[in-house]
Image (cartoon, rainbow, N blue to C red; front, side, top):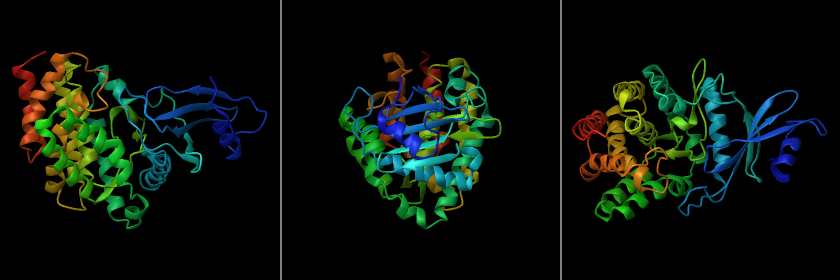
Length: 336
């Protein structure tokens, strides 16, 4: 397969390759929101990404392609503050909705999700992710320009709040008022630059640092969303790797502790309380929202998620460890 003419012209126009030289184009799988190409030239390998107007999921899910430009801006911001934690940004075309960055080979940068699903769980990786997130949130909170540069509430609503929380409220009408209130609180909280998709599928475990990818949801808003979004995946993977439940819960604790220890833009207890309110809603969203996790296929597993999440959506906890303890209690009392 090869990309369309627009992608090829961007490649040449940006000086990423030379006319007439051999180029190998390989489509990369895994994402639902963009076309992504691995491009190999005689000189180097790069990655080119183009946002799609309609996401590749079963539900009808459309989103503005302007998110590509905000992802590029986030990548540049992160490269300035934690350069070891992002691929090098190379070129951008805001009109066509394309950007290029360095390609990081899997043999040196394995995917964190693949490691977790293979049962290789290291609390040190989770702690590093928490530390990187806190550094980015802190740097953006101290930079007044990020508030206006990432005024993307509409994008964030279309990509996160509506498909995750509002859709879940439609599936659970009794929870809709609670989820709507959570959406309003989250959308109105403006403290730091949020990545918006801090998932193990978007994190590479590099030799020196975890590397964050896929920041097309970037938004100056509530940093608690990033914390809750990532912790959510560590809980969910307990259902498919029950033998690793202990290490996964330890990783949860390590990420939480590392992150909260570095919060300096507001009281850490305030961030934690908002994350603790978001976490059960996000748990439920990954089985009943527009983007369910693909590895939870049994109704039994989905019911365990609901059993834990629904009471905590109705009556949110103030601490993340309370959510973790409720999750552990459900898994121990109702084993798969």
